Image (cartoon, one colour):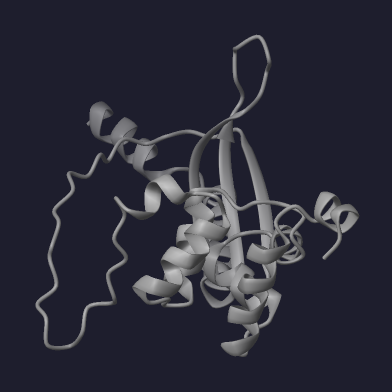
Length: 185
């Protein structure tokens, strides 16, 4: 590769390696995009060496392709994350012989309200990005929640929402009517 090409594609070696790994696993850009929830256009830029994936996305790719330690370290070095390689270990997936670790995370059941939503879809499902308008100077919306669901689940949710809205719109809230009747008796 000449000097001009390396300026156009500064991450060519990494991109080429990622593309080879994807093709070896017989997956399309769209399949990988759906699996790791990253825009397919962004993956194309990674594979063509135009853009460097950040550590989180690179870690998702390594995990998705189930890369073993040596190959994973090679990818990290090609990305220029050398300082992380020695302190970072890539463990193979848990085999059926090992006992999985259970982590208990406290659940916060507060209702978080959203007034904005972004939707992105691919052949496997969709991702909903719920956001709240910001009162800050830059007026950039703040993410509240990000939820990924399959096409089938999305279809079920649409049916449930439609039914709930029809029920609520056609029949007034009987609970509040019953409470008023009970107070009068």
